[in-house]
Image (cartoon, rainbow, N blue to C red; front, top):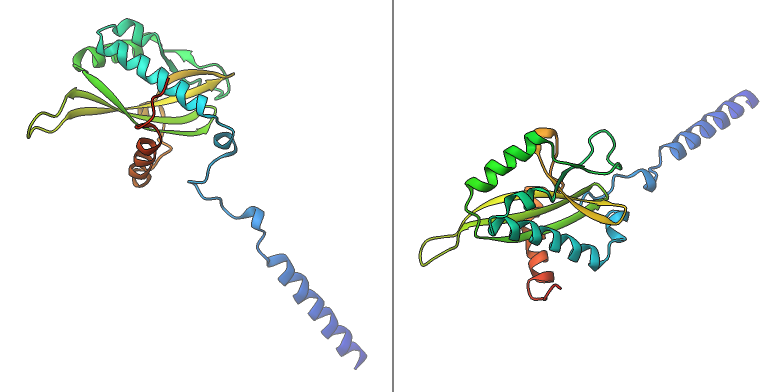
Length: 192
């Protein structure tokens, strides 16, 4: 009888330890991919304004035909170490972008949204207007994606290039609601 009791006690202890070990730990549960990151929570409205001014300055130069000056504003993020300083575009990228920007008669632009995520991983979607809407004719536009990079507090405008492995951080499913939130937050305000 004593052997049976100790065996049962041992079995109950094993079951109790097993059940305790199987409890889910809330710190290990996956986080919501749309939840703000610590970096995003630390952002200020001035960061948003700085990125808006950077994108506006780039497109204003393009719209005025100052392609060379606009291209001088573009960087590639350093693929070897995301925390290193972004690099100016190499000659190949400069030539590709020069051809693209001179081929498109960009007459205006509209920032659709800005999504901050990490120092090196942010996203700006911009509609570049080639022909404004007129009467029954809809607007003709193309979309540019940029990856603004916060390097030691100085924002740099990096290209988002899927050919070089860059991926968007905003899914197509979330883009519409993010665009609406951006419009609600900034369309009515005069950003200086």
